[in-house]
Amino acid sequence: MDYWSTWMLIVSILCHTVLLTGGVELSFELSDNAKECFYQEIEKNVSSTLEFQVVTGGQYDVDVTLEAPNKEIIYKQVKTQFDSHPFVPTMSGVYKVCFSNEFSTFSHKLVYMDFQVGNELPLPGLGEHVTVMTQMESSAQVVHENLNNILDYQTHHRLREAQGRKRAEDLNERVLWWTSVHSQEPLHRKETLPKDLARCKKFLLLVAEIKRQHIHLNNLVSGDTHSRTLDVVMIVSETQIS
Image (cartoon, rainbow, N blue to C red; front, side, top):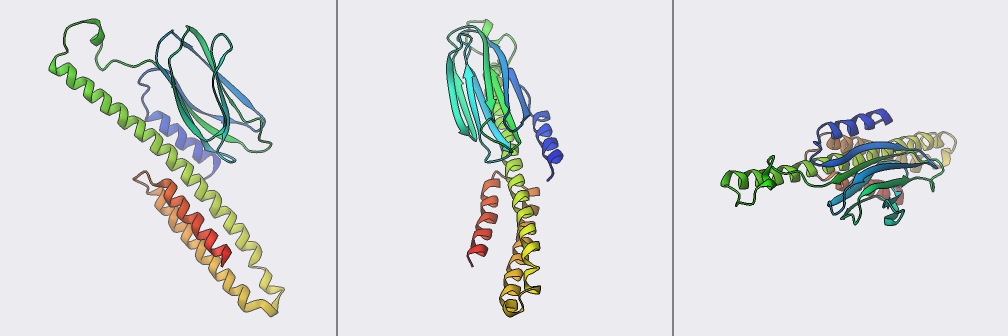
């Protein structure tokens, strides 16, 4: 998958994800030696959650800081792949979250961020009365919570799929280059021809296996992207050792 295909996949993730609360949800490019900051106005005592994940690039890590209106750092992570940080603001104002890739000299990264502020009511005006909820209101609340869980799972599943697919693509490209280089060696070393041909045969089988894994990733319907990617990595390790 090339760079723009990855971008289109992330855009489709966001198009299928409904913003259930206030705040912002997006994916963005983070260049090498770059820093990006986002600002969100939050009222006091409104429960909020900052969630992020590095989808592609480098070692899939990024530095993150969350700053209160009084410049106090209330959350900080260094070289983290993903995290979810719930918090309750102690003051009203504009909160700033910054993502830094300044430690990287050449790795471009694609980062997903979801900044949720407050909770959406299942029905309009549900919290305005003090009486006991009716059976319909209770059912609506249960359905609302279940839909939230489903949407959250689908978003993270698509992110894992995009990350696993990108890793498999990168691995496939490296193996193809390595095989192309070493396939020329037997022509210059006739004395080791049988051994080198056997090695090339192993790598050709490896390429076929990676392509098979890639087909499985494209048809992925469950959340096992990482396990399939690890299978490919194990195949590479075993081949190189042998």
